[in-house]
Image 1: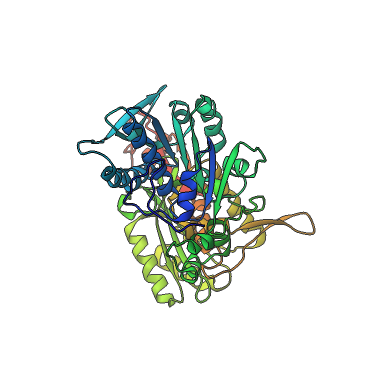
Image 2 (image 1 turned 45 degrees about the vertical axis):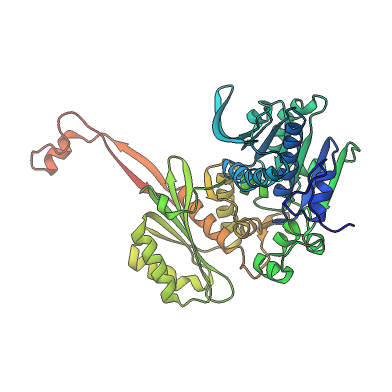
Length: 470
C-alpha cells in the first residue's frame, strides 16, 4: 500500500490535510453505496467529511452544484460534524482555489410536516450545500440529496430511518455513505454490513490496522483505559456481540442517553431517588441519583468510590442527602451492607432508607422494574460514556437447569456492573415510590377533635397526601 499522502478527490493540486491510507482508500472509492466499519476514534467521520467537502469544491470548480446531508445520532453529534470536520476541512481546502471563493455558515430551522429541526449548513457560491442535523425518520425523508449516515448503528429507530431514507436516495446519481462502530446485532447497520448484496462496497479498519497504517495510539493504554473486554472487542476490535442474552441491549441504553443527564447543576429541585451499591475492596461503591421530572427519571449524579473507607462512603451519602430532595434511598443490604444500611437509617430515618437484600428473586424483580423504565424511555442517562454504557450492558440473563431465569455478571477491572445495580436500585425505588390517597373529612369528627372548631372549613375541602410504598 502506498504511503499516506496529501490528496483531494479527483484533483491534481496539493491539499494541506494529511490523510491516512485507510482514509484515502475510503475517500477514493466512489461506489454509489458505501459502508465502512471503523474502530472508535480512527477518524471515520473526519475522513468522510473530507470526501463530502472535496465533492462540493470539485463541483464549484466546474460551475456546478451538489447537495449533501449528514444525519447524525443527535444534535450534539451533528454540530460536531459541522464544527470539527466540515468547517476546518473547507477552510484548509481553500488553498486549492482562486481567492475570493467564500463559504457561508449558518444555523437554520427546517420544517418537515408538523415537526421542525435545527440544522447547521455551509453553502458555496454556486449553490452546493452541506447540511448537518439529527437523524430520525422525518429528517431522513425530508431531503433529496447525497447522504452520510454517521455512527448509524447508534441511531434511534435505525430501521425506521432506513425505510424513510432509501426511497429518497434512489434517484440516479445520489450517493450514500454509512460509517459506524458495531453496536450489537439488533440494528440496521448490522443488517447492511452482513448482507451479501453485491451493490455495497465495504471497508473495515480495526484499531490494530489503523495503528499499523499510521494512527498514533497506544494499544496497551487504550485497553487498560477501556477496562471492559466486551467494550474493547466491540468498539476497537469490531466484533458484533450477541445481544440476545443482554439484560439491557445497547439499543435500549443509547436510546435513553441525553446530553443534559448526569449534570448536577441542572437539578430542578424535584423529588430524588438514590440507589446505592455497596462495596469496600474489589468492586465499586456507587451512589446513583435520579430526579423525577414529570414521568421521567433524570440521572443527576453518579458517585463512585473504590477501596475507600466506610467513613468516606458515609460522607458522600451525607453530601448527596443534603444536596438533593431525597424521597427514598435504596441500599444493597446483602453481605457487608448490613451495617451501612443500619447506620443510614439512624442518620436519615427508616422511612427514607430501604435496605434491599439482593437474593436471586429480588434481584430479578429490581432489574425487571428498571428495564421496564428503559423500554418505556422513562429514564435519561449520560450520553456518550463508553464505560457507563458497557457497565449497563454487562448484566446477562441465563436460564437455569429448572428453566427459571437468573442474572449473571462477569467481574472486570471496572467492577461487577456496580453502576448498573445502583441505577436499578434507585429506579426500582422510584417506580413504586408513591400512591395518592384522598378523603373527605367527617365534619362532626373534626369539630369534636378541635373542640368545636372546624379544622377543614365549611367547604368540605379534601386533604391529600403521599405515602411511599417500596
